Length: 309
Image 1 (cartoon, rainbow, N blue to C red):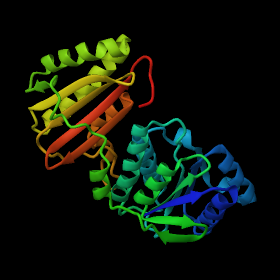
Image 2 (image 1 turned 90 degrees about the vertical axis):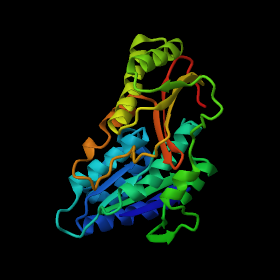
Image 3 (image 1 turned 180 degrees about the vertical axis):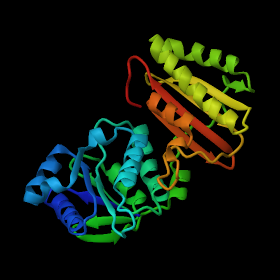
Protein backbone atom coordinates (compact mmCIF):
# COMPACT_ATOMS: atom_id res chain seq x y z
CA UNK A 1 0.00 0.00 0.00
CA UNK A 2 1.20 3.50 -0.85
CA UNK A 3 -0.46 6.46 0.86
CA UNK A 4 0.55 9.90 -0.36
CA UNK A 5 -0.66 13.43 0.17
CA UNK A 6 -0.51 16.03 -2.58
CA UNK A 7 -0.46 19.69 -1.59
CA UNK A 8 -1.33 21.88 -4.56
CA UNK A 9 -2.30 25.48 -5.15
CA UNK A 10 -2.90 25.68 -8.92
CA UNK A 11 -4.64 23.64 -11.61
CA UNK A 12 -1.25 22.98 -13.16
CA UNK A 13 0.10 21.50 -9.92
CA UNK A 14 -2.90 19.19 -9.64
CA UNK A 15 -2.45 17.99 -13.23
CA UNK A 16 1.31 17.55 -12.73
CA UNK A 17 0.45 14.81 -10.23
CA UNK A 18 -2.84 13.43 -11.58
CA UNK A 19 -2.06 13.13 -15.28
CA UNK A 20 1.10 10.98 -15.08
CA UNK A 21 -0.50 8.96 -12.26
CA UNK A 22 -3.46 8.10 -14.50
CA UNK A 23 -1.47 7.65 -17.71
CA UNK A 24 1.03 5.30 -16.08
CA UNK A 25 -1.85 3.37 -14.53
CA UNK A 26 -3.48 2.91 -17.92
CA UNK A 27 -0.17 1.84 -19.45
CA UNK A 28 0.25 -0.83 -16.76
CA UNK A 29 -3.45 -1.77 -16.93
CA UNK A 30 -4.00 -0.79 -13.31
CA UNK A 31 -7.57 0.17 -12.33
CA UNK A 32 -7.69 3.96 -11.83
CA UNK A 33 -10.31 5.87 -9.83
CA UNK A 34 -10.34 9.65 -9.48
CA UNK A 35 -12.63 11.04 -6.76
CA UNK A 36 -12.26 14.80 -6.72
CA UNK A 37 -14.05 18.03 -7.55
CA UNK A 38 -16.03 18.52 -10.76
CA UNK A 39 -13.47 21.12 -11.83
CA UNK A 40 -10.52 18.75 -11.37
CA UNK A 41 -12.30 15.93 -13.18
CA UNK A 42 -12.90 18.24 -16.13
CA UNK A 43 -9.23 19.27 -16.16
CA UNK A 44 -8.07 15.66 -16.12
CA UNK A 45 -10.55 14.56 -18.78
CA UNK A 46 -9.37 17.31 -21.11
CA UNK A 47 -5.73 16.39 -20.49
CA UNK A 48 -6.32 12.67 -21.08
CA UNK A 49 -8.14 13.23 -24.36
CA UNK A 50 -9.22 9.96 -25.96
CA UNK A 51 -8.12 7.99 -22.88
CA UNK A 52 -10.43 9.95 -20.55
CA UNK A 53 -13.16 7.29 -20.49
CA UNK A 54 -10.76 4.51 -19.59
CA UNK A 55 -10.65 5.54 -15.94
CA UNK A 56 -13.41 5.79 -13.33
CA UNK A 57 -14.59 9.09 -11.84
CA UNK A 58 -16.59 10.12 -8.78
CA UNK A 59 -17.27 13.49 -7.24
CA UNK A 60 -15.86 13.69 -3.73
CA UNK A 61 -19.26 14.37 -2.17
CA UNK A 62 -20.77 11.20 -3.63
CA UNK A 63 -17.69 9.13 -2.74
CA UNK A 64 -18.36 9.75 0.94
CA UNK A 65 -19.24 12.64 3.23
CA UNK A 66 -18.10 10.91 6.40
CA UNK A 67 -14.87 9.15 7.36
CA UNK A 68 -16.49 5.72 7.65
CA UNK A 69 -18.12 6.09 4.22
CA UNK A 70 -14.77 7.11 2.75
CA UNK A 71 -13.02 4.11 4.29
CA UNK A 72 -15.83 1.82 3.11
CA UNK A 73 -15.56 3.18 -0.43
CA UNK A 74 -11.80 2.64 -0.53
CA UNK A 75 -12.16 -0.89 0.75
CA UNK A 76 -14.91 -1.61 -1.78
CA UNK A 77 -12.84 -0.26 -4.64
CA UNK A 78 -9.90 -2.39 -3.60
CA UNK A 79 -12.01 -5.54 -3.34
CA UNK A 80 -13.67 -4.92 -6.71
CA UNK A 81 -10.64 -3.66 -8.59
CA UNK A 82 -7.71 -5.68 -7.30
CA UNK A 83 -5.92 -7.22 -10.26
CA UNK A 84 -6.06 -10.87 -9.20
CA UNK A 85 -2.68 -12.54 -9.18
CA UNK A 86 -0.88 -9.69 -10.92
CA UNK A 87 1.51 -7.37 -9.13
CA UNK A 88 -0.27 -4.24 -10.34
CA UNK A 89 -1.82 -1.61 -8.12
CA UNK A 90 -5.33 -0.28 -7.69
CA UNK A 91 -4.75 3.45 -8.14
CA UNK A 92 -6.97 5.99 -6.40
CA UNK A 93 -6.89 9.78 -6.27
CA UNK A 94 -9.25 10.68 -3.42
CA UNK A 95 -9.82 14.32 -2.45
CA UNK A 96 -12.14 14.81 0.55
CA UNK A 97 -14.66 17.64 0.84
CA UNK A 98 -13.57 20.11 3.51
CA UNK A 99 -16.04 22.93 3.00
CA UNK A 100 -18.32 23.57 5.96
CA UNK A 101 -16.73 20.98 8.23
CA UNK A 102 -16.55 21.59 11.97
CA UNK A 103 -13.38 21.19 14.00
CA UNK A 104 -14.68 17.87 15.27
CA UNK A 105 -15.32 16.61 11.75
CA UNK A 106 -11.89 17.72 10.56
CA UNK A 107 -10.25 15.92 13.48
CA UNK A 108 -12.23 12.77 12.65
CA UNK A 109 -11.08 12.92 9.01
CA UNK A 110 -7.46 13.25 10.06
CA UNK A 111 -7.81 10.24 12.37
CA UNK A 112 -9.32 8.28 9.50
CA UNK A 113 -6.45 9.30 7.20
CA UNK A 114 -3.93 8.13 9.80
CA UNK A 115 -5.85 4.87 10.27
CA UNK A 116 -5.66 4.08 6.55
CA UNK A 117 -1.94 3.44 6.95
CA UNK A 118 -2.92 0.48 9.14
CA UNK A 119 -6.22 -0.69 7.63
CA UNK A 120 -4.94 -0.62 4.05
CA UNK A 121 -1.52 -2.07 4.83
CA UNK A 122 -0.90 -5.18 2.78
CA UNK A 123 -3.28 -4.17 -0.01
CA UNK A 124 -2.23 -3.10 -3.48
CA UNK A 125 -3.85 0.33 -3.22
CA UNK A 126 -1.85 3.33 -4.33
CA UNK A 127 -3.75 6.20 -2.75
CA UNK A 128 -3.06 9.90 -3.39
CA UNK A 129 -5.02 12.44 -1.32
CA UNK A 130 -4.93 15.95 -2.82
CA UNK A 131 -5.25 19.07 -0.65
CA UNK A 132 -6.03 22.35 -2.42
CA UNK A 133 -4.52 25.26 -0.46
CA UNK A 134 -6.90 27.62 -2.25
CA UNK A 135 -9.75 25.95 -0.36
CA UNK A 136 -8.41 24.35 2.83
CA UNK A 137 -6.74 26.19 5.68
CA UNK A 138 -3.22 25.71 7.00
CA UNK A 139 -4.35 23.46 9.87
CA UNK A 140 -5.83 20.94 7.46
CA UNK A 141 -2.68 21.03 5.33
CA UNK A 142 -0.56 20.45 8.43
CA UNK A 143 -2.74 17.43 9.23
CA UNK A 144 -2.04 16.08 5.75
CA UNK A 145 1.70 16.22 6.37
CA UNK A 146 1.24 14.31 9.63
CA UNK A 147 -1.03 11.56 8.28
CA UNK A 148 0.69 10.75 4.95
CA UNK A 149 4.07 8.98 4.89
CA UNK A 150 4.84 10.56 1.51
CA UNK A 151 3.93 13.68 -0.42
CA UNK A 152 3.44 13.53 -4.20
CA UNK A 153 4.99 16.44 -6.08
CA UNK A 154 4.38 15.98 -9.78
CA UNK A 155 5.85 12.59 -10.65
CA UNK A 156 8.03 12.49 -7.53
CA UNK A 157 7.22 11.03 -4.11
CA UNK A 158 8.99 12.72 -1.23
CA UNK A 159 9.03 11.45 2.39
CA UNK A 160 7.02 13.63 4.75
CA UNK A 161 9.31 14.84 7.51
CA UNK A 162 6.32 15.61 9.74
CA UNK A 163 4.65 12.21 9.39
CA UNK A 164 3.50 10.62 12.68
CA UNK A 165 2.94 6.87 12.86
CA UNK A 166 -0.78 6.06 13.22
CA UNK A 167 -0.59 4.80 16.80
CA UNK A 168 1.09 7.98 18.02
CA UNK A 169 -1.20 10.20 15.96
CA UNK A 170 -4.32 8.56 17.38
CA UNK A 171 -3.01 8.88 20.92
CA UNK A 172 -2.27 12.58 20.57
CA UNK A 173 -5.40 13.58 18.64
CA UNK A 174 -8.38 12.52 20.71
CA UNK A 175 -11.39 14.79 21.00
CA UNK A 176 -12.83 12.83 23.92
CA UNK A 177 -13.71 14.60 27.13
CA UNK A 178 -12.65 12.96 30.36
CA UNK A 179 -15.50 11.87 32.63
CA UNK A 180 -13.53 12.24 35.87
CA UNK A 181 -15.18 15.55 36.80
CA UNK A 182 -18.69 14.80 35.50
CA UNK A 183 -21.32 14.60 38.23
CA UNK A 184 -24.43 13.63 36.26
CA UNK A 185 -23.30 10.27 34.88
CA UNK A 186 -25.51 7.23 34.57
CA UNK A 187 -23.79 4.05 35.75
CA UNK A 188 -24.85 1.21 33.48
CA UNK A 189 -24.54 -2.16 35.20
CA UNK A 190 -26.48 -4.40 32.83
CA UNK A 191 -29.94 -2.84 33.16
CA UNK A 192 -30.77 -1.91 29.57
CA UNK A 193 -34.24 -0.59 30.46
CA UNK A 194 -32.80 1.88 32.98
CA UNK A 195 -30.12 3.21 30.63
CA UNK A 196 -32.67 3.51 27.82
CA UNK A 197 -34.89 5.62 30.08
CA UNK A 198 -31.93 7.84 31.00
CA UNK A 199 -30.95 8.34 27.34
CA UNK A 200 -34.49 9.14 26.21
CA UNK A 201 -35.12 11.58 29.06
CA UNK A 202 -31.94 13.48 28.21
CA UNK A 203 -32.22 13.35 24.43
CA UNK A 204 -35.90 14.12 23.85
CA UNK A 205 -35.79 17.86 24.77
CA UNK A 206 -32.84 18.37 22.42
CA UNK A 207 -33.85 16.27 19.43
CA UNK A 208 -37.59 17.06 19.60
CA UNK A 209 -38.63 14.88 16.64
CA UNK A 210 -39.78 11.43 17.78
CA UNK A 211 -38.09 9.68 14.86
CA UNK A 212 -34.74 11.31 15.67
CA UNK A 213 -35.07 10.42 19.35
CA UNK A 214 -35.82 6.82 18.36
CA UNK A 215 -32.76 6.67 16.09
CA UNK A 216 -30.56 8.00 18.87
CA UNK A 217 -31.98 5.43 21.26
CA UNK A 218 -31.19 2.67 18.74
CA UNK A 219 -27.67 4.02 18.20
CA UNK A 220 -26.83 4.11 21.90
CA UNK A 221 -28.42 0.70 22.41
CA UNK A 222 -26.28 -0.74 19.62
CA UNK A 223 -23.12 0.50 21.33
CA UNK A 224 -24.19 -1.05 24.63
CA UNK A 225 -25.05 -4.29 22.85
CA UNK A 226 -21.57 -4.31 21.32
CA UNK A 227 -19.99 -3.80 24.74
CA UNK A 228 -22.14 -6.50 26.35
CA UNK A 229 -21.12 -8.94 23.63
CA UNK A 230 -17.51 -8.21 24.59
CA UNK A 231 -18.20 -9.06 28.23
CA UNK A 232 -18.40 -5.44 29.41
CA UNK A 233 -21.30 -4.93 31.85
CA UNK A 234 -20.22 -1.75 33.68
CA UNK A 235 -20.23 1.47 31.66
CA UNK A 236 -20.41 5.16 32.56
CA UNK A 237 -22.91 6.93 30.28
CA UNK A 238 -23.18 10.71 29.89
CA UNK A 239 -25.80 12.39 27.67
CA UNK A 240 -25.89 16.20 27.28
CA UNK A 241 -26.57 18.99 24.77
CA UNK A 242 -23.65 20.46 22.81
CA UNK A 243 -24.13 23.15 20.14
CA UNK A 244 -27.57 22.00 19.01
CA UNK A 245 -26.68 18.31 19.18
CA UNK A 246 -27.19 15.60 21.73
CA UNK A 247 -23.85 14.06 22.62
CA UNK A 248 -23.42 10.71 24.36
CA UNK A 249 -20.16 9.49 25.86
CA UNK A 250 -19.76 5.92 27.08
CA UNK A 251 -16.69 4.76 28.98
CA UNK A 252 -15.61 1.39 30.33
CA UNK A 253 -12.45 0.68 32.29
CA UNK A 254 -11.31 -2.11 29.97
CA UNK A 255 -9.23 -1.25 26.87
CA UNK A 256 -10.92 -2.83 23.84
CA UNK A 257 -9.82 -3.65 20.32
CA UNK A 258 -12.55 -1.78 18.45
CA UNK A 259 -11.90 -0.58 14.91
CA UNK A 260 -14.37 2.02 13.63
CA UNK A 261 -13.19 1.61 10.02
CA UNK A 262 -13.25 -1.63 8.00
CA UNK A 263 -10.10 -3.66 7.41
CA UNK A 264 -9.80 -4.58 3.70
CA UNK A 265 -7.58 -7.53 4.62
CA UNK A 266 -10.36 -9.22 6.62
CA UNK A 267 -12.13 -12.05 4.75
CA UNK A 268 -15.44 -10.83 6.22
CA UNK A 269 -14.93 -7.08 6.66
CA UNK A 270 -18.66 -6.33 6.59
CA UNK A 271 -19.11 -8.36 9.79
CA UNK A 272 -16.56 -6.33 11.73
CA UNK A 273 -18.31 -4.51 14.59
CA UNK A 274 -21.67 -4.52 12.80
CA UNK A 275 -23.50 -2.78 15.65
CA UNK A 276 -21.01 0.10 15.67
CA UNK A 277 -21.21 0.41 11.91
CA UNK A 278 -24.97 0.82 12.26
CA UNK A 279 -24.46 3.46 14.97
CA UNK A 280 -22.06 5.32 12.70
CA UNK A 281 -24.63 5.40 9.92
CA UNK A 282 -27.38 6.66 12.21
CA UNK A 283 -25.37 9.38 13.94
CA UNK A 284 -23.63 12.55 12.87
CA UNK A 285 -20.34 11.23 14.19
CA UNK A 286 -18.91 8.27 16.07
CA UNK A 287 -15.51 8.46 17.75
CA UNK A 288 -13.66 5.65 19.51
CA UNK A 289 -10.58 5.87 21.70
CA UNK A 290 -9.01 2.97 23.60
CA UNK A 291 -5.93 2.84 25.81
CA UNK A 292 -4.63 1.73 29.20
CA UNK A 293 -7.31 3.78 31.03
CA UNK A 294 -10.15 2.06 29.16
CA UNK A 295 -12.31 2.54 26.09
CA UNK A 296 -14.36 5.67 25.37
CA UNK A 297 -17.03 5.80 22.66
CA UNK A 298 -18.68 9.08 21.74
CA UNK A 299 -21.58 9.64 19.36
CA UNK A 300 -23.68 12.65 18.39
CA UNK A 301 -27.07 13.26 16.80
CA UNK A 302 -28.01 16.62 15.31
CA UNK A 303 -31.01 18.35 16.86
CA UNK A 304 -32.75 21.63 16.15
CA UNK A 305 -30.84 24.94 15.93
CA UNK A 306 -27.80 23.04 14.71
CA UNK A 307 -24.52 24.95 14.81
CA UNK A 308 -20.95 23.94 14.19
CA UNK A 309 -18.79 23.40 17.32
